[in-house]
Image (cartoon, rainbow, N blue to C red; front, side):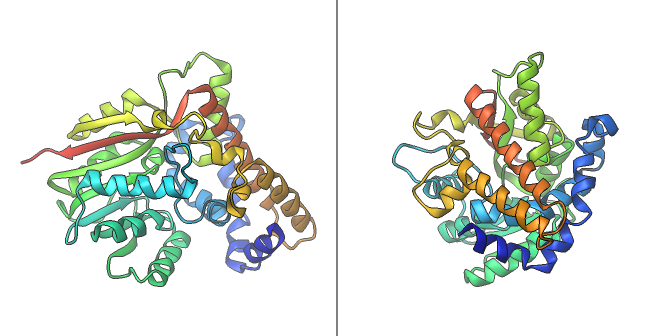
Length: 343
């Protein structure tokens, strides 16, 4: 199973081309001994994020399918079902229905947009600054028969090239954590919403249990940032303050990860499950065997140089996420629902 997947992955010359040269520059943004600090990551966020998704998109799909986010989960519920339930939850909270025009902020390869469009009938436009992912969005939308409702466009959510009051609603699944300036990102989303329009998101945050003076907490935070292309993970109060500064009225907010049952924490897929081949690939066992295989095919020059480094980076990020979840200092699922004030 792993060998076939890696063969497919590396038979794509586009993938080989993206890997070459991108790894060194990406890792440089996190190399504090060589100027890779928070300010460098914020200043170069577009380049950093593009390199990151050029490098990891195929890895993500190999283990995560097409919805690149976590979700609160209940005992007896599959991981895939928890993702779909969260996406339906967003559609209901936003009141989406046929005829509504909706912005998907940082749409990835479009898994959530297709689920939400099928569920609600709303039209979804996804913004993404990565060309490779946008190609996949288009292909997947066509294959799903949803090109009439779903589309992607090249853009930066810090500077959306769309007119004021374009959208009836907007949402983001773990995307605005990449913003170098939360207030700036939220202001731009605010600008594009119609008066009274709603914005819902899952945000990656450090929780109140995070101690900035604790060396282990800082190690975990840095590990998540380096492995997931983040400039500086925000504290929960900072996110709410940024929404208010952008003009939003926050209607509802809570750490959705807190509603997980103890048997199914949000990070369980990264630890490992055996209920499907895809579940095995997501966990520690799958990452171990994938890393060994990738090291071999790179040594044989089948895979481009640096592929093992990408695999190691993602493995380290997974362990940092698990540690953050177990310690309760990090959540990928801080939910908020905010409204553009009626004018």
